[in-house]
Image (cartoon, rainbow, N blue to C red):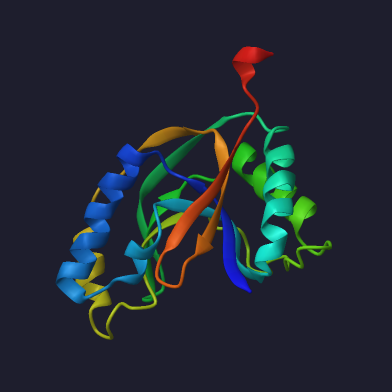
Length: 183
């Protein structure tokens, strides 16, 4: 079994900006979990799947993504989930909500992949640090980020499949949304 998830991976220029925030958390508090994946917005959270199903999933993901139009995504500063996760907040608009709902309908609770629909409400975000923020360090970290601005925008144009290699998450496939210029 391998661990996978589906996400909107940010453009490399924005990823590099966000890596600087993740590195600050690593250098200051020893937080490394956030550095194990590229900057992304999770659409379907991590799940276990036999690697033999990956080729079929890639094909289904490509067909699914080809029905979608690119759409704008915007961030809105920093936020947190209590004292366990620091992240960049993402504005939830209709195209992003529709993408999540369509992914859930297409890929969860359906054979052969066995993906389970997440019960938590959809709260799109870009993780800076999670699960390894030391006890007592959150307030100092939050004081550093809470008034920082990070209001950026880009066009989501592909849905990516990421696979854990035992150490880090790697993008193994990016399924492009339909090309509106060719219609």
